[in-house]
Length: 98
Image 1 (spheres, rainbow, N blue to C red):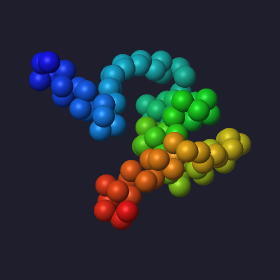
Image 2: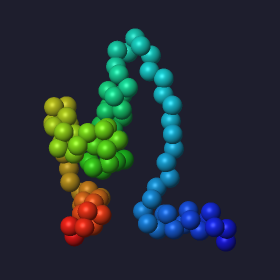
Image 3: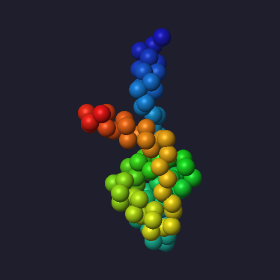
Image 4: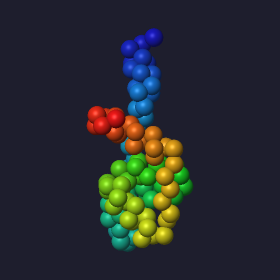
């Protein structure tokens, strides 16, 4: 097995995910900033359950608490499910608090 393939498999075992870059041109006449587009994208991913609360907050560039406030302002209910718990546990382990 090649070392690159072994590294990829090891990375997946450690919970690393592949990342893709995306370039998006936002027409000026839409009147939104890059930050607003990023926030709207993250809210959409959270609403469709494609991203957990923690992950969507990170994608939006906000703290989890701030992201929850934004969701509340938009009338989007906040749920806390098993994937959120898993992310919290992983974060606590990384911080040495668990």
